[in-house]
Length: 277
Image (tube, rainbow, N blue to C red; front, top):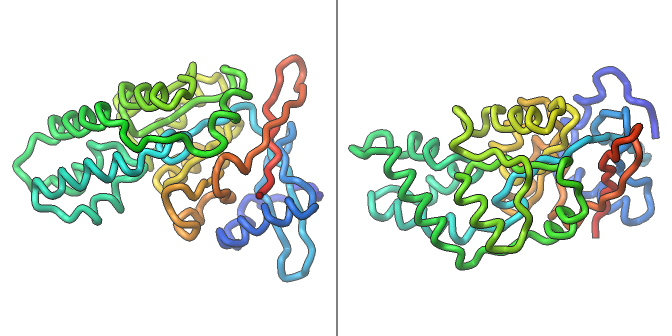
C-alpha cells in the first residue's frame, strides 16, 4: 500500500472497467484487499504494465444505495411497462429503455414524449401506478439482504428515481428493510444525473457527501454521485461493464462486498473489504 499522492483521484480514469473487475479477481487470489479505513480517501490504482499492484484505501461513514438494479432487480417490470406505453404511443421502446434506466419517469417522458400532446405529469403518475401494482418478476440482487441487515440504520440510505410508494412497495415485496433515510423522485426538484438526491441524502445522514460511498448500476446515477462528491461502486446488474467506466470501480453484484467495522472514536464506521468470486 502507498500513501495517496496529490491528484491520485484522477488516476483511476486510465483504467478500463475490465481492469477494475480484474483487480477484484486478483484480490481473491491473495493480493491485498481493497478496504475502507478511516482518514484515507483515494481511488484504487493498479500498475498493470509494470506487473505490480498497488491498492489504496478508502473510508466511508455511510453507504448510499440506488434501489432498482442495486438492491432489487425490477428490470422485467420496468421494461414491460415502458414497452406497453411505447407501443400505445407509437414510439421506439428500445430508445426509451436505453434512456430510462436510472432516471425519473417524468424526466424520461420529457425527453422522449415532449412532442406529443400529452399531460406528461399525468402519464408519469399512471406509469408509476402500474409499476406499483406489478411485482411479477421482482427479485433481490444477490448479496443485498446480507449487506443491509449488517448495516446499522444510521449508516445507510437509498436514493431512487422512483416514487416513495414504488420504493417501499418493492422493498416490502422482497423482504428488504426500509431505510431511515430514503430520498425519492418526488422529494427532489432535479433527478439523476443531477446530484440533488445524493446531496440531500448526505444532509439527512448528517454527513459530507465525500464521506458517503454510493453504489449504483446506471451511468446517470454514477454521474449524479460523482457530481455530489461521493465515491462510486458500479454493479453490472443492468448495464455492461463498458458503460459503467465512470465508476471508481466495478463489481458484478453486492455479493462481492464484505462488510467489517472499526471504531472511529465512539462511533462504529463501516469498513468494506471487497473481494471477487
